[in-house]
Amino acid sequence: MVNSRAEMEIGRYHWMYPGSKNHQYHPVPTLGDRASPLSSPGCFECCIKCLGGVPYASLVATILCFSGVALFCGCGHVALAGTVAILEQHFSTNTSDHALLSEVIQLVQYVIYGIASFFFLYGIILLAEGFYTTSAVKELHGEFKTTACGRCISGMFVFLTYVLGVAWLGVFGFSAVPVFMFYNIWSTCEVIRSPQTNGTAGVEQICVDIRQYGIIPWNAFPGKICGSALENICNTNEFYVSYHLFIVACAGAGATVIALIHFLMILSSNWAYLKDASKMQACQDIKAKEEQELQDIQSRSKEQLNSYT
Image 1 (spheres, rainbow, N blue to C red):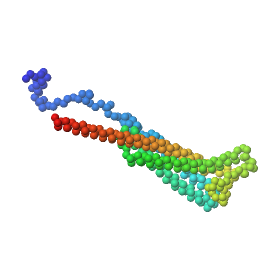
Image 2: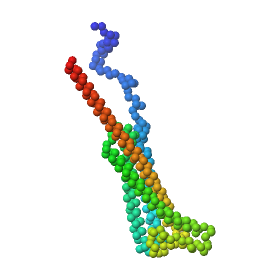
Image 3: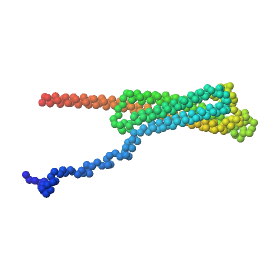
Image 4: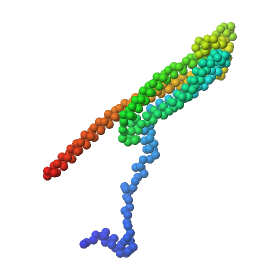
C-alpha cells in the first residue's frame, strides 16, 4: 500500500516523539462554528418585544379610569364634609333639621370607599383581559387558542362595562348638582361685590335660600342668608375649597365615563377578534383532519399495492 505524504509526516512525528501517540487532537473550531454574540437576542430586542405586547389602548383607558375615579372619590369625599360644615354653621343651626341630610352624606361617603375599591380591581381585570386578547400577546406566547369560556367572559365584560357606563352617566349628572348650587351662591356674591350694588341699601335684599334646593326642610332656620352675611360665607375657606373640589369631582366623573366608553370599544373589538379567531381555528381543525384522512388513505393504498406486487 502506498502512503500519502501527509500520513508519512504523521508517522515520522510519532517516531520522533513516541509519547504523542496517545495524544488526542481536537479540531479548532472555525469562526463559522462559533456563536456570534450578535445572533443571540440582547436586552434591546427583548425590550422591544415586551413593548410590542402591551395593549396601549387598554393601558390608556385604565390610567384614565383610575384618575377619574380617584378625583371623584377623593375630592367628592372632602367636598361633602365641607358642605355639611357650611350648612351647620350658616343655613341650619338646628341639628334635627339636617339630620337626614347628614346621614345621607355619610352613606354616600361610605359608598365612595366601595366605588374606589371596586374600580381599582375592575380596572386591573380589564387591563389583564386586554393583555390576553391582543394579537401582540398571541405572537409572544405562541399559538393562539380560544375557547367558548373565554368568549363568554369577554361578552360578560362588554355587558358589565356598558351597565357601569350608564350608571356613571347618572353619577356625572348627579355630581353636577352641587356645582350648580355653589355656582349660584358664588354668582350671587359677585353681584353683591359689584360696584353697582356694593354699599347700597339694596344689598341686604339679595339673598340665597338653600331650602329651595330641597336639601334641608322648609322649617329649617335660618335657611336664607342675605347681604353681607352671604358675602362672608363666600369668603370662608370651606366655601372656596368645597366649590372647587365639587368641580374637580364632576370632572373626574366625566373622565370615568370617557374611560368606560373607551373600555367598551376595546372590549367589543376584542370580542369580535375572539369570535373570528374561533372560526379560523375551527376551519384549521377541519383542514388538518381532512389532510390526516387523505394521508391515511394514501398510506393504505400504498400498502395494498405493495401486497399485490
